[in-house]
Image (cartoon, rainbow, N blue to C red; front, side, top):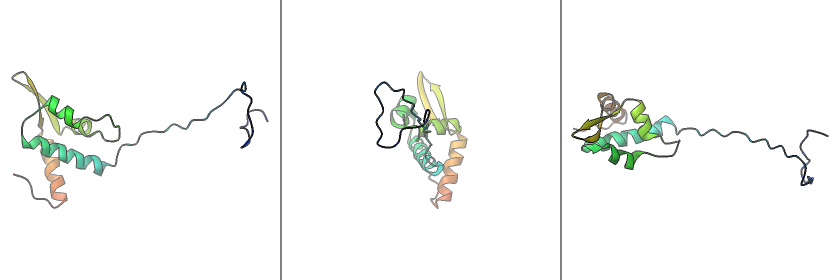
Length: 113
């Protein structure tokens, strides 16, 4: 019976080699609709007033691999960083504005002025 796993309830000597089969678990991102809804919130938040990079990171950066809101918005080109007067600012791009308008229209919400 070499190479086979012990029967349930069987004891294994303390000095016996142990072979463990770990199945790798891969973190799956949240569904796109969840992340998209949070990106809409981020873009609305940015549209309220000028925000510094530090403000954005303090509020929107997450270590959760399932909710990459800031990272996704940046990767999709919805936000951009600019240096103005020694301050690192974050602004919504035209692509971000278009995405926001599309999301609001698809939910039946009128465009915000």
